[in-house]
Length: 171
Image (cartoon, rainbow, N blue to C red; front, side, top):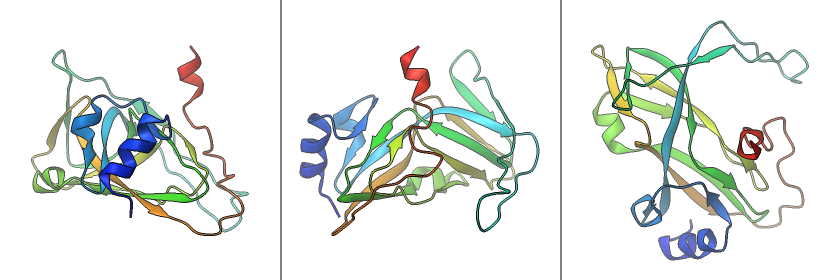
């Protein structure tokens, strides 16, 4: 697992994470806090198969925060998109865990592995379990990304999510 010192050195060289808000606040002893960029509501179902030939992602619609930048979310599932762009070299993978404050408020984020070579603005599943809901402010730190050294990776990530949501950076 990478330490805060190593993470800082890599980030300052333009590796691992870009698009962050406050490097000093977001670097943790063994990880990096990801912040809330946007929230989307699911509109229909998705499909998952073995080969991905019949994969279908559900449609979503962006939710708008109130004038103070708050999302008032009812119990349920949402897609969250992070502000930060992750760019992993071939010798580093990452895993995210929910921040403890999010858990204490009755919500969690469910994430997948960020494979070596992945580059994009990622998303995760936000699950609000609190029957009273949760309020999240835009840019709230909701997940902590931890980085793991990988030995001997010959190929990096080559799936459909490579370079996801980076086209909006060009506008």
